[in-house]
Image 1 (spheres, rainbow, N blue to C red):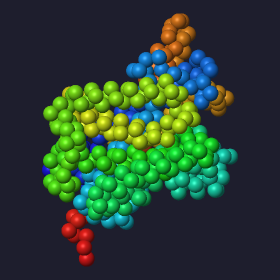
Image 2 (image 1 turned 60 degrees about the horizontal axis):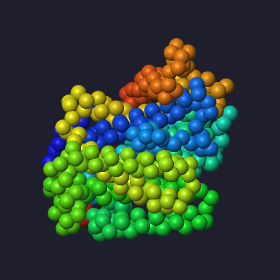
Image 3 (image 1 turned 135 degrees about the vertical axis):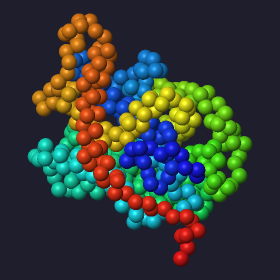
Image 4 (image 1 turned 90 degrees about the horizontal axis):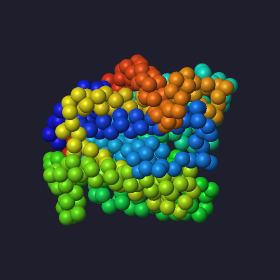
Length: 418
């Protein structure tokens, strides 16, 4: 691949050229998750009752749906992971030990710093078996992991991500040797397992949401398949190894290349349509048969958004791109620390005695202020700056120094043979 302009952030990989826009997407996804939690907790603090699974809000406007069903942006994180790792590993040999060293350096320092902070903060909640479950990347088993809310509340995604890290070198080796068809069969298997789980288990919602298998693997695999489209689009030198392309996929590549803004508009509209469907159908808490196929469809929708945004990202105003890249560099630290920040500055309406919050009383200063405006102001003026400040400390004090210890872990495929 021709060397693209590299990012100045330590988050840039030594193993692949910088892809302008991926860091923007990570930053935006982290912001949306932060805003979602800050906004709904703010509403619950000043305008009870708090939103729970029993009174989940429903959007009255499609544009508002992403603020309710914001969990979709977690899927964006997973799509980006599968996408970027495939750009790294396609037609190359991954040295597993060096690769895992980089993964540990990327994730574990921030994760363990936050985990030990949570243990120190709530020592009475420490249990050895729960600690081992959490520290050994099985934190998605929510009933067995440490419950140190609000510190460890978002840790389940780290477990899912790291489980994917463990198997990715095998997945890319399969793709390199056998093409994309085995990955499509894996996605079909996930749908099949969710179908079985729907009839045998107690919660299709939890089955498809919290776990890599059978829920989140779809997103990583579809991100990997999306990278193949990207390589065709960008005339990657390795594209000859992909084989012939069907007219359908070639049409998508042509649209991304020749009509970037129209493609992005279509991708954004498709995302809003999916979010609207989720909201009108009961949203995240809903236990329904359609959640058998929802992870696959949601992953396709998010891939479309990712690819179409990559088409327009280079055309954005340069200061805006720098801001988005900055937020992208902080995205992992922001995601890890955002719940503790919300608990501190906003509070928790379900645990008021422990987390009363520091909310600004806009409803007293401006009687009659719309509740959503009140919640938005508190989130943007309190939660967002506090989360960014703590993220900067996490990033510069832990994340960045350890990421700079990473090394190259790929070699050309023709070097793989003894």
